[in-house]
Image 1 (cartoon, rainbow, N blue to C red):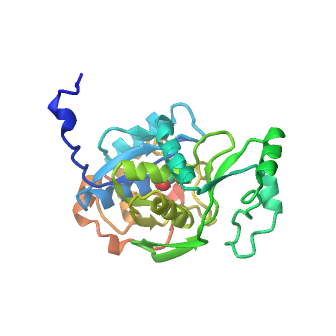
Image 2 (image 1 turned 180 degrees about the horizontal axis):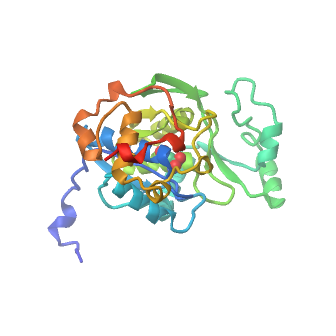
Image 3 (image 1 turned 90 degrees about the vertical axis):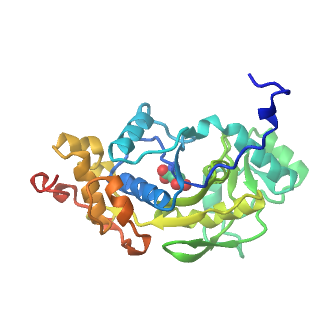
Length: 318
Ligand code: GLU
């Protein structure tokens, strides 16, 4: 155990090299859309000499066993990572410290609104569409005490001074989007996703965020939060999603879409990588083979419409 006299205690920690990441929510098995995004995140990171880290976003729904299966599936398609795997549920103190920092700067307030009340209230006249209308922003101390006395669980919100923020995305270019009084700590006391992701990326040395483009609209909020916390804003690449044949986001009910489903049909992990690569305009049967040919400039900018029944005729593939 190091002591105060141990010289290693006084050595400044060497900064970890920058990293890319994949951050699945352990709510179920990864489907081909998730695997494709993970493969892309890995290719972006490894082709630029970055570390690649995994973070398990387990502040919400957790299905027992899902995390282990997700890790096994990523490994099976050749998406390896630099340990340790980080779990958000182990990091609540870090999120609370960031929330305390914002509170000390006068940038938070308690919100007692229910979801239904927020939906019913008109959006603030100058705020972005769908933004929190600011009902609890300027409650007096007496009003706040009265709400507390009613036993309403309070969420903690950011007191945002801006209504828009611009980020730069490698695939979408400059993207300007709404910034509102985002929830930092939910009514149940759990830190909110938008806050946690910002703290985690900064502390894990993640300077490259590659994820599905359904998350692009949340990105200005996250970058804005990073700025308020004095944290660096990562580079972003929001990649097109995989959709089903009706144009909806791919889901488990769309057929044989998980690795386990595909293996049960006789596909191999190599088949899956081949199909994912083909959907990205690349040829290769393993993640390692794709690395030297990966070029973000050649990525398709449209979603991949997937028909699981026609994914790959098994006989034609490696
Ligand atoms: N855990 C989130 C999801 O699975 C992704 C978070 C992120 O990439 O920032 O949708």
